[in-house]
Image (cartoon, rainbow, N blue to C red):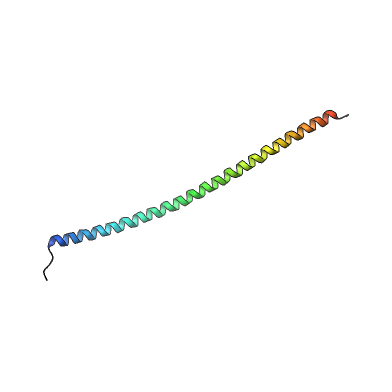
Length: 87
């Protein structure tokens, strides 16, 4: 059997180098993608926490506003009762 030409051997070697580089790049890409997914999960968690904080803050503000309205009504009623008093 005849030995293959030198250009074929060089091409075969270059092809193997390209395959190895492709594998290396694939692993590097997958690692970066995994890191980005982890970071994305963290960001989603932070956004959810902030949304919950905003929601509870709004609920608290609404309760305060209602309480303030009730307090104003009590003060108004208290003044009316005071004006009607004989003492």
